[in-house]
Image (cartoon, rainbow, N blue to C red):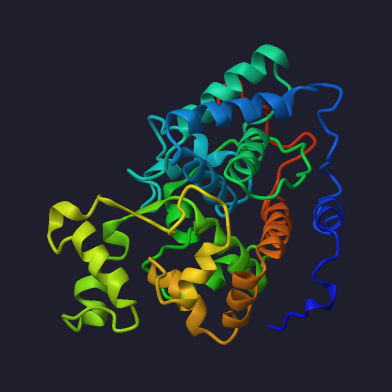
Length: 325
């Protein structure tokens, strides 16, 4: 993957607002007449949640990823289990780790008061993810709207389709590309790990038993390794403790890529981007040019947010994001 600086400073807004990936059935102005204050309502909801807990920005962004990568961006991750079905909340990647449902519930309630039966939960989650990026210092990017909500949710589908930090990079990239994304999108969207935290069990083998060797990952920066071993000691009760994914975990910047270059990527799946000749050049590129990372991140988010969308008469506008009407 080659990058040239000749087009580097082409205005960011043109790339973001004129995306080639916009579905013809979605529209940037979809709610301009029916719910003109939608963006303000969503932004306030995300801002309020972040005021209570900064980490919520990363949780909302992750929730959007986990929605879109399982059968498309149709709000299925938000559905609760029923007496007959187990939904995506029970999947391995979501169980006891997916967060932010109550934030989306609160935003939906306020939106319903202002614009009853107009705005889907899928669109609310898409906008909330954008606001999470923007409110933590990332670039604002426009997203086309008009998604409708799905009618089902499956834990088995989520287990099959969601990438895991415990998987090799080859498996992860295959899951992204199966959705119509490409290698550049993999590198760019992985940059979402510039905010948030990970539970110790997702990377602890790197600290004490890398590849079954009984020793730490030799590629890890020594100081970084020592700090992590204190945070996540080699005992079962440390599995759910948290470690920052980035040295600036509450700021949407390009330090994620700088950390990979310095062998300080928390997850093995992240650090692997620096060890693969298909992705290493892009890591170097984004480590040098934060504004270009922001630009490309917005474009890749729009692309991801168009995966498997329901529009027109398909799906529904849920009254409650946790249950079908």
